[in-house]
Structures are given as structure tokens and as C-alpha cells.
Amino acid sequence: MASSKEKKNVMIIGAGWTGSMLIERFFIEKQLLYEVKCIIDDDETKIGKYIKGVLIAGDRKTICKNVITYNIQEIIIALPSVSKLEIKDIIGICRKTDCKIKIVPDLYEIDELNVDVTRLRDLKVEDLLGRNPIVINNGSIKKYIEDSVVLITGAGGSIGSELSRQVALNKPAKIVLIDIYENGVYDLQQELLHVFPELDLDVLIASVRNEKTINHIFEKYKFDIVFHAAAHKHVPLMEKSPNESIKNNVFGTYNVAMASGNNKVKKFVLISTDKAVNPTNIMGASKRICEMLVQLLNNRFDKTEFAAVRFGNVLGSNGSVVPLFKRQIMNGGPVTVTHPDIIRYFMTIPEAVSLVLQAGAYASGGEIFVLDMGEPVKILDLARNMIKLSGLSENEIKIEFTGLRPGEKLYEELLLAEEDMEKTNNDLIFIGKQIEFNEELFMKQLEDLKIAAYADSQEIRKIVKEVVSTYSYE
Image (cartoon, rainbow, N blue to C red):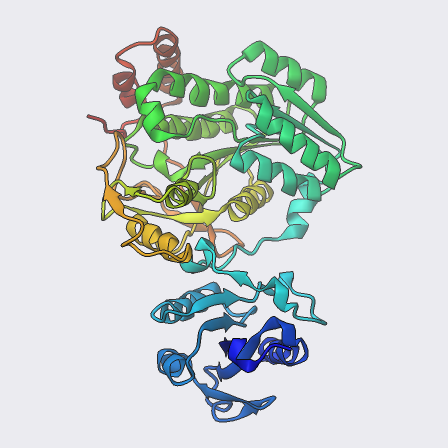
């Protein structure tokens, strides 16, 4: 049997049922080598009392003092039902100490009959953002997806693959996945067939740029719902290849959206981005044109409800800053940040996708749905947090500032100045007011834009500026 000297001195934050069960497990399972020295709880009526012989020593303001008093080595946050904002605040206090921090998973991850201490997890980046998860109406989502034939373009990407998983949960009649890159969508196909063995699934390798192929696919499958996630999204790369951005994002969207209208698809949902607002890069401008297409085609096809969903950066998506920082830390640094003041809004991939699905349920046609994304995050703070979460310091992993990249803003916006916010039944989902534009002129501009893009015109940015008046470039 291990001696008490070999055990870690532990502080538990949370004097509720979860904290009590943890203490009991630590007493029973001696091999876990945890010795609970004190408990922290903000309920004043509990302070000074004991749980299984362990003192509730104070509230969160006393965490740092009690870490010293009890020589604490590890802090366990046992508050699975507390809001993410509260957890963020508590984590901020705990990180002022040198203690290792672990956390009990959220309520939905816990077996209510048994808190398994082996499932305590380390902090994740998401814990530091303090965003409460989006609450969605699963019933309304299932109502329109169940027994429907669903198309997901760009299915092998971060958003497309999670869309595929969440759609599959809602028992569609059939899912068809399209992607131009075979490896990602192949892996997704194998995963879905394993997890959902009864799923009727077709996977097609095709480009949304190919109008004939897209039309043939729509004529064959008779889709009820289309989620259009296929797009070039990497800002610096698209700045180098602006014509490719327009060909893929604008005219790929045009092909899929037109096919949806012509084939009487019930719902078409475009995946858009906050970079479409007052864009300073060609990728954002291309997405703004796609939003305008959604508005235009919704007015021209009465059998199809067209909508767009606009959100910020997605944690852990392909090519995003979080996996980049992880690789840089793993390689010993430096961690590269473009500017010390750059900020971004973030959400998790499941959050983003649940919003897309909920938007589909709300859509009556022509809307741009916008998420209340909470407080923006300084990328420098994110880098520092990730270094510390890795158990390292800035003395060991350096941070370097590399300068803003072409087309990059210090901050992103979610609404144009002209767009008012209209509430939906979900407190975190809003609708941007439609901005009127000359539709006949827009169609003529699209023709000119297509000719220029496929001619690889050096004037493509100037032509895009004529379509998107809020686009600015150097």
C-alpha cells in the first residue's frame, strides 16, 4: 500500500454531489494516490463544515491562500453543472498557482451513479474561452431532417464532416457526400458506416465547379436538403490565388444553389463566415457574394428556402490557429502570432454545426443567421494559454510576432453596419436584416466576374469591389 507521503495533496472545488463522490472514491481506491486536503465552495452556508472529514475551507477567493496552507499539488474542479463562464473564472484563479488542474467532465458525460475519477481530464482550450454551449431544439432539427434526402458538399472538411455526423444522428432517408479531395471523405465514409451501420450513404468525388456534374447529381438524387460547405477558406492562400477563390467559392456556390432551386430542394443552407463582413480579403469578399446569391435566389425560386449561416473561427478546424500552435509547441517553438493585438471570435466545431442545423429549422428564406459568439479572444492570450496547458513556460517556448498577413484584419465583425439584429427562438442566434441591392445589375456583374476569373484576370479584385462595395484591398 502506498504511503501518504507518495500521494498528491489535492484540493477539490465543489462541495456538491460530484465533489462528495470523488472524495469517497479517493478513500476507497487507495491506488489512486490522491489525498484530499481541502474543499472550496462559494456557498457561505457550507464553509467551515466537513465532507467525509475534509474541511470546506473557503470560497474561490481563498483558492491561492489554501493552496499554500495545505501544500496543494493538484486542483480538481468538480462543477459539472456550472456555467462555462463561471468555470473560466475559477480556472483563471487556479492558474495563478503552480498546481496541476484537472476537471470533471460536463454532466452529459457523467454516469450519474458513479463519478469515475479515471475520467478526470486535463484542461482544454475550450475551457479557457468561457463560452456556454449553444442550446438547440433537437426536436425541430429532427423534424425536418428525418426521412429526408440530404446533400453535404465539402463533406471531408472540418464543418462538412461534423455536419455529416450530426445529420446521420437525425435519421435521414439518405445522405450524399460530395468532396473533391478523396482521402478526407473516404475516412469519413468508413467512420459513418461503422457508427451508423443502417445509414443509406453515397459518397461522390466531384467538384462543385463542374456545373454538368452537379446538375446530374441533383437530377439523380432528388434532394430535400442541401448543406453547402465546400469552399476555399484559407485567407493567405486565397490572396495568392484570388481567381481560384472566386471560381470555387462564388461559382461553385452558384452551381449548387441553382441546381437546388431548379430541382425544388426544400432547404439550401450556405456555410458563411464573419470574414464576409466589410471584407479585407478575397476569401471574405467571395463569401459575401455567396450571401448575396442566397438572397437573390430566394427571391427567384419559390419552392426552395435559401439561407446562410455566418460564424467566426472554429476551434481545431483544418488549418486553424489551434492545431498550428499545438504543432509549434510540440516542435519546441516558436509559436507564431501575427500581431500582439489581434483578436478573434471562436466556437467549437459541434457548436458551429448545431447552429447550421438549427438555422435550417428556422429558415423561411433569405436569412443570414448570425451567432452571438460571446467575447472575442486575443490570439496572444490563446498562445500563452496553450503553452501553459502543455506544461511549459514562455522561457521554454518562445512567442514570435510575424506581422499581419495579406488581407488579415486585427478583428472580425459579425454584422454590417446596415444590418439590424432580429431575434429568433434561440437567444444566441440572430438574423441579419437583408440589405437590398440591384438584382439585375448583380447578375450582370456575376457574368463579368466569371469571365474575369476563368481568364485569370489580374483585375479580379477591382471587379469584385464593383460587386461588394464594402470590400477593401491594397
